Image (cartoon, rainbow, N blue to C red):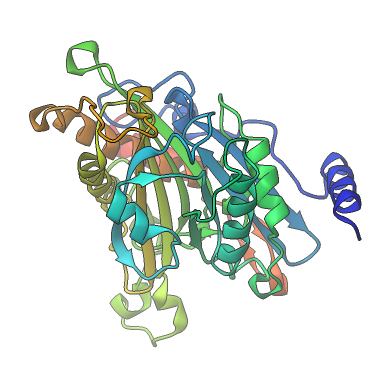
Amino acid sequence: MSRKSFYLVLAIAVVMGTFADSSAQKKRMRDYGLSYGVFKTGKYNAITDVAGVTVGQVTLNQGDDMRTGVTAILPHQGNIFRKKVPAAIYLGNGFGKLAGYSQVKELGNIETPIILTNTLSIASGLDGLITYTINQPGNENVRSVNGVVGETNDGGLNNIRARYVKPEHVLQAISQAKGGPVDEGCVGAGTGTICFSWKGGIGTSSRVLPANLGGYTIGVLVQTNYGGILEICGVEVGRKLGDYSYRKSVENKAYNEEEKKGDGSCMIVVATDAPVDARQLERMAKRAFMALAKTGSFASNGSGDYVIAFSANPDNFVEGEETHTVKVLDNDQMSPLFAATVEATAEALWNSLFAAETTKGVDGKVIEALPVEKVVKMIKKEKGIK
């Protein structure tokens, strides 16, 4: 099949729904009267509240065993390779296959969109990013591309060995990236993920600092596929539901593989419009990792937990100069950003669970959605919320 024919088939498939895409915004934590933190959210309570940031997703949900996809995050709408953004990556627990880490660590910037997908599709993610970058006007002589591709292992519901994700899906996700509301739950890279033994997925949230604290926006997007002892808004939900890591050992029952529910992975992407550099972004990324603990994660041995943080502040977009003069926040001004990052990350993680739906996948395995109505009543009762 020629490339032209392939794209024609791809376009028809998208129209006919072969690659399912959720167009209706699912219910989120706040839709049930639950909120978290002290800072206000942005207009969409999403990573796209950071000006210029867009998100595109391709959901591959077909047949009995295709439960995977791609989520693309674009820091701005220009040529990212030419207008690199300050960035940092924090390794909470390095049981993962994140591509592009070393150059981001060394140079302190990102030069491509950020791609999230499944563990065995890292190569497709990179292939797609390379094609996208070298075909950008102005990049005709580019011979090196440091693509950033994160992953979690969706093999519990997806036939991951089939490697359904192709470079074309990565290009599609990038091309349809947009601002505004972001679909959550069983979409994009979260189509086949599992979180705390319930259905996980994509989640997002944002916070806007008061004017006297800088007025900056912090947006977070997550791909949840990890475990532990679920907590929501300080309530031990997993324990109360009787479903948590090591339950059988605690109850003195025989060991089995279910006790390894703490394993998994979580990808966290943090965006901000604050004028911060790579060092400060790494400090913010560390705080995002703290939010995992607020949800009940203990970063198990087999959990790949990574935070990618970048600044979308236009003042930092510089190119071709021998010296760069940029303004960055004083360290004493960072604490509000830290607090807002923790809040937005925790809520994004919870939103991924609230929006997810019961899913049947490979080998007939079924992962139930979080029993949201029951959980909401539980939390409201304990918190005294009417």
